[in-house]
Figure 1 (cartoon, rainbow, N blue to C red):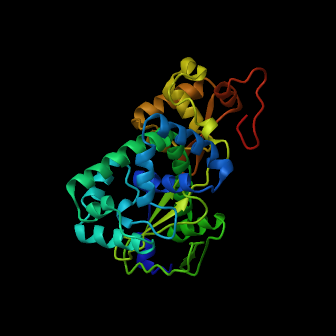
Figure 2: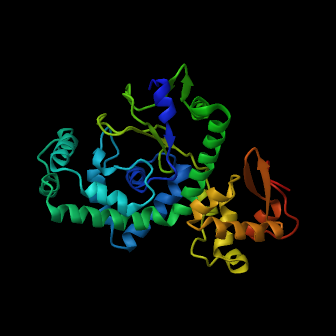
Figure 3: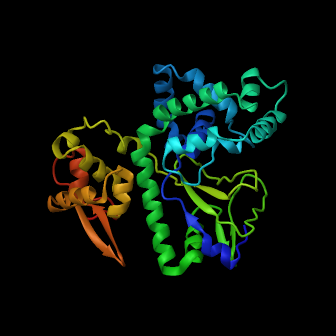
Length: 340
């Protein structure tokens, strides 16, 4: 991907994980065995939850429309870092009939046999078929994505903090150079190279590229196949193994939540990486003023520290905060790099 100076100036980073990109990518993860240490526990938990809720058949139907392969329809991921599921679904369900036919036809051109009847009615833009698709996506998102949003948003906020600092120090080129930390990525001489599954040159043609962090993206980035659509580059957030255990307790029944409150316990959990108040507010879906009050209480209790870094104030969980979060007994010992 080659950039002109004008295209670099227009570059932007999505403000949050995108609900429909995450839905599509999570469907892929249920169909493959990639990153078993990171996503194996999530697969088992979600598969069981889909069976309990009677959504296993609906999830299988979604997987046929969104297979883990060389192609899945672009209309399933209309967002560029949209934060609202309903807005994204409204755009998806408003896809023109001509485009539905073209993309579903392309999907089935790779398969033997006729297009299934249900898929044909969807390709024809049948309102009932579109309604069923919207209902299936909402129900699947509620089980497979929504319960994990706090952890997902925390990782996206931490990534955005790193990108913002790089952009402040060195501009758009510094932001792109920061992606060199991802395996196979390299930015040099106004050209970004990434380990895309196939050889491809993405032409921006003066348009704005949106970089979209994705929690359920594994190893390789993704882009829309139709280059007439607004360009996006979806890249992995690469959560560590054990993220699901650390992010559990969102129902508020964990002992620490009973001790300090659900919102403060969740805020403390989010600080696996230093975050600003704005980052925390976005991840928790709270007003900045409310988040600031929670930060103040936790700081006065010695559970977090706030340190200025340039124009930003980053909050760090202390060793005592980790001990309280994990229910540790005895003298807390900090992890490498964690504030004492």
